[in-house]
Amino acid sequence: METTKKVKVNFAVKMVGFLAHDNNLFDTTCPNCKGMYSSFDTSACPKCGAALVYLTTKNGHAMSISEGTIFPAIGDQEDKDATDIGKRKNGLLPRYRFKTFGFATDAGAPPLPDNHMRMKKGALVEIVMIDHQFITSWFQSKKGPMVEMMAMVLAYKGDSANVLRDPKVVAEATVAQAVLPDGTLVPVDTTLKADGTVVAEKDAQIEALKAQIATMQGAGTAVPTEAEVSFDPFAIGG
Image (cartoon, rainbow, N blue to C red):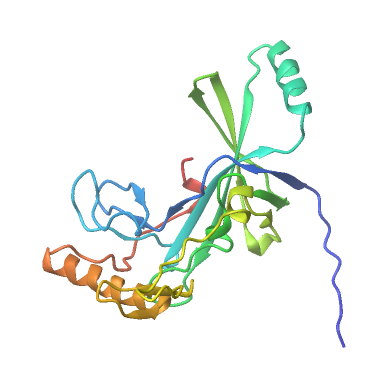
């Protein structure tokens, strides 16, 4: 028999808007400089050259962070609000950002945060935040000082970040297909190799990944490994 439990909500935020850029991924950090990076971009610290390690929670679980900037879909009201803010002494325009998280359940690489690969510029997203507030800070922009309103999307509190509609450019994109010597189209889920053979896309990606790892090992570059790095998601700077 299923039962439901009523939970009292004292503070709730629901925001629908468009992403200003592709979400940034952070899943590694420098043990020396403490900077955060994406393992897809680099395996060594750009500042000191040290091998990067996975970001971890205070309990030692590897984690990943997806960070985005959202423009509320409120039409002309945004300009009206900006006018009212300008009338206030020391009024600051807001910039809304959010972070979602992925956590590893055991040793190894952390999974990507939910929906990260769909968090692309122009996507329409919905952010829900329950019973905790924005993490605020101010920064200097081309328009002057602004206040950053950071939503920490925490699943255990019932928060969510969902893509309501993919970017128009993605939805209308056409796929260019390779052609075999006899004029036959190569299926879109396969790859045409230099020697003329056709392999499944997934197999081609695995081959490319193996080649990349071999190159890194040959150059003496360390592949990131999990380390005991104390990490508090609420201490992240935007």
